[in-house]
Length: 182
Image (cartoon, rainbow, N blue to C red; front, side, top):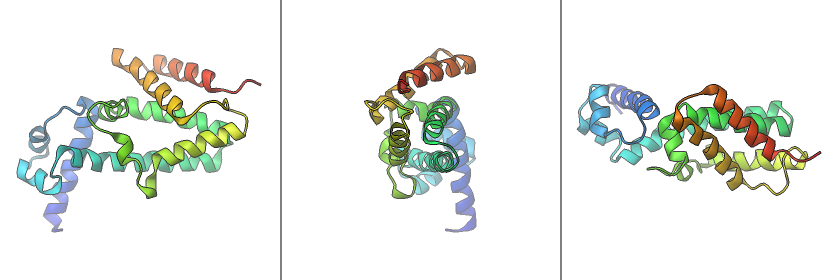
């Protein structure tokens, strides 16, 4: 790829990442092109569909989340790693409206993108959950779908407006329900 084409691609990705994060998935590609200072044809050459543009963004974000999950797994006990990852997921999705919409199934299937072997988010989530269950930190009857539903529930509170204190309270409530009885 020519240097100017690569610069345009990166600029489109940066603008799209910021725009989808703050305004959600409904922003038209033409608006992203305008903000990036390129034509819609330039966007289409790199990203033939809006989904392909969002997929590139999600891949970048998922890779960051998976890297952090692996770091937690390597440096924390299994229970702490799981609960810190749960909070990280809620905070990360709350800070990104488009990602939050995708997580709740609105407009884009984030999980279909999150299965790439090099950064399989679902596998990492499962590893953290199973590890925490084996360590006796998380209830044995909890499945990954339960965890996703609780993350989405914590994010639903964000629809009333960003409130870090309320988000933390929701995370604490969800984690209390996930904890194994001692």
